[in-house]
Length: 188
Image (cartoon, rainbow, N blue to C red; front, top):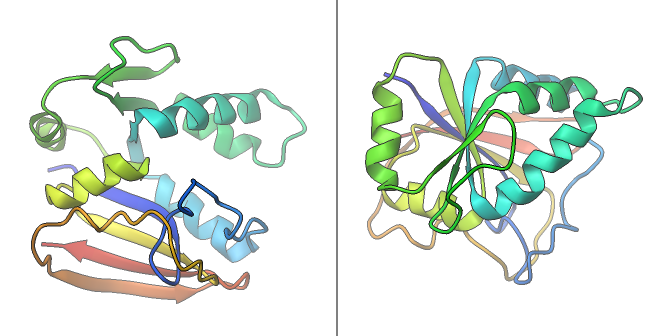
């Protein structure tokens, strides 16, 4: 069975963005140890799941990075661009991006079917509403929560849709030189 991992950055008080989508609290200058860790997290992944809102920025950004010979993140851009992506949307009907398909059906059914297919791990980065839905439906197998050293007081939470307590098992935690801490949880 394929595993679905969540990788997300959040504040100490549990928000993935400010109330208006602000991301200015995020640690931008990652330390080498964090870059290496995230590269290792992505290596076994052969499918990226995205909500439509995130896909509209994520996919073009990483395609541009992949095509820029001078960009220091070019290798990551190539990996993101070449990896098969599925955009979950209730409004898009056709993909406008390479290596990307759109899923409009029953999201729970589609993700459970993906988990049963042969292949490597899958990862989801967002967007916020999509990830909230996945958490509510208990579809994520492992959470990689990258906690940034910031408190913003109000913002978007990916946990507010959960209707009942969900037991998490801490698999690992690690502090990085740039001040970010990752908490790795197995769900269920």
